[in-house]
Length: 315
Ligand code: FES
Image 1: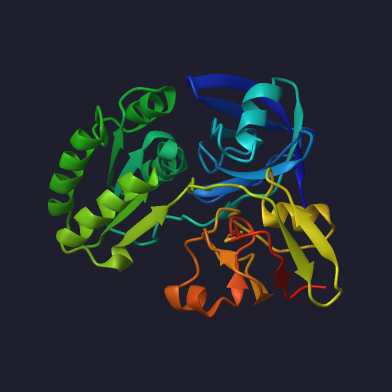
Image 2: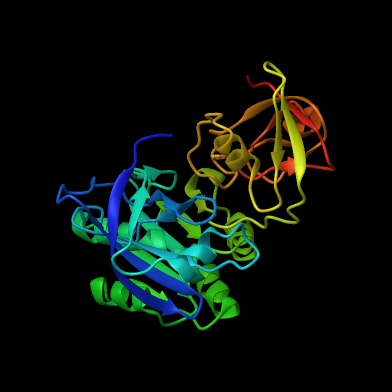
């Protein structure tokens, strides 16, 4: 396990019926690390089984006295967000990992067009603080309207933040905005998969090259969580993966160290060699050819098609 920082839950705020915000302060008075806009932290959520869930930092990048994260409750997830909602309260101590960034704004962009759906607004809080401080122009379109984070951003950068009632209104505004940007603008999108797909389609139709479109996916459809078995080829060890855990979590619980960054099937950091078995790929990192070859698996989200075993190139 990597380095962790102990933090206290200094405040809990309900942002919406299914979203709660935690303010996390350092336990020993040592400032928290400054971070770059778009960073996330992995939170070790205590419970019967410790979950390590990534959450975007929703505060200014220089906010070293307190981090804020927003956690949406997912009842069909693996239980980490549910545990935050049901068992984490003010005064509790949590372990977090230092900030990492998979969604940094493009340095040198002349302008930023930001589009957020629902809780996808969270990474843009740190973006907005940084862009305002740097004097870089941007506009943010988000839906639905309302919510403390949206209100905070509207107050921070009046005129740059546009709230829309729902998806149709958001997409109409995005279509118009895509045509109105000067050369050198970069588009960044965060939200539910269907909304992100719609924005990417619109960007393609409006002639935006892929190199100027950036995505932050924060939730993947996990699908059924049936148990299965894996075997570690180099030691012959058998490990059972339960219905309430990922393959990565089962390996970690068994003391097998696997590097990771996103824990959401996006970054590719946890890639493992697969020697035998039929994987159920749920990541968005492997290419179609790599999937067809069947020689690699991303254990943070992918599972086994059937009972297994999957035979992994691990000791
Ligand atoms: S940790 Fe990023 S793909 Fe698994």
